[in-house]
Length: 558
Image 1 (spheres, rainbow, N blue to C red):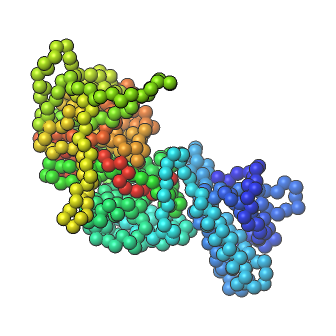
Image 2 (image 1 turned 60 degrees about the vertical axis):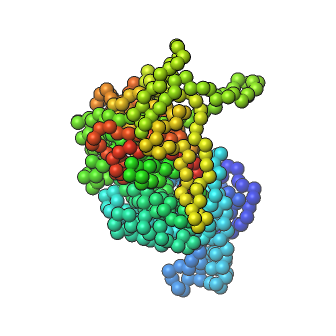
Image 3 (image 1 turned 120 degrees about the horizontal axis):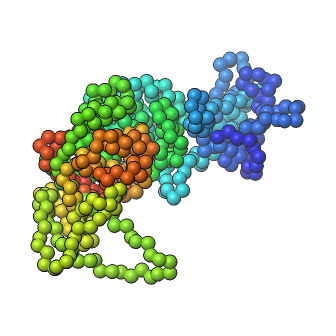
């Protein structure tokens, strides 16, 4: 952000004096430090104006000639996106700021252009070394110059994705000197088919300008390739162009930036694309009853959330407000679904008292063994008196009971299976039995069978305005499981979703809302009709199970 230079950076790399692009009588001294660009107007008055730009906010710099062929001067323009106060509302957001200077040190136009290029190159090189980084996150960087394939769905959202790209993103990529190939998708699964066959050696990153559905296609196309292990390492970028834009909102949130929506969110994601930092992203493997296997980056939903997502498609033309309209319509005729839910909870190591010695304890023996056949669970008679396997689990409602086995025996992790040609298949789901097999004894089975919704999410946001999993990160290795049981009133459910805008739904004290961190889950609907969605896309209705694969993909983020 622009700020007064109270403590100048001692590591001066370049210094020069240049004129204003509009008035030759106005001169500036420009100092390129290690991490900032300092600009000071040269004036005889005692109070000289100094502005400091952080190179963290710089996406690029270019040298160029002026429009007048008779002008012997050359120019260099630096492009910054600092946080500045909004014009019409409170708070700050990234806004574009250009700083252009005229170089006319000598009468030789070529020498002036070479000097401008020297400055532009130095500013670019310095800005590459400075990008917004979160503490504790291990980043890689996209290759430079980064060759990007950008896939745009012109029908996403309100049908304005292509216009948003040309109006906001195209210029940023030019400023950052990022070469790209633009691909306009023409039909459903076009992106999936394209990336399945594409020569990815010619592409350093795949960027999606659409809603979340197009990224779902791209990820599954990559995982269907024979070289999936290398293909899924291709950095993935997201530019919001749809209605929900859940991953874009999550990526923005992870960057620890102030909340942003609409074009401000697009500018934020475009900025992160230009800076080119890459971190890990978890994927979830999902098995359907037909034996189809999908890979998901966002969510698995059944009940209210899935209903709203699919039924609000008819309001797509109004943009993100479609979800509010769908929510109100579905609240008017609230449904309860019958089904069975089981999950493998995350076993968090207990914190030991200071000074205590950790000892290896043998796994506890089952107090009440559990057998589930495709989730119709039945208890084996207890041979020991006064033992009960029912316990209160961590949730927003301490009275919700689950049937669980205290054994920590998980299915042994195995190496991916090998094909006959020596190539490994997609990663093995070592935590999941077959859908026709009982869940392992270490799983928890939910006692309740009447649900208003079940939502498994692995990003922080379910939409731009829904901060659903406040503690989630893209690479935390956790599925954040929420479910709401039957009996909740319409006003109470509405309050939950209103509180979700600021991530406060877990503090509402709702006795019907349960939240668990899990590694795997199984859901078996009993109600004959309903909808299940994966990343907002409707899939076949029936039994489904899922397992997380930590850090399987790579995400361009900040």
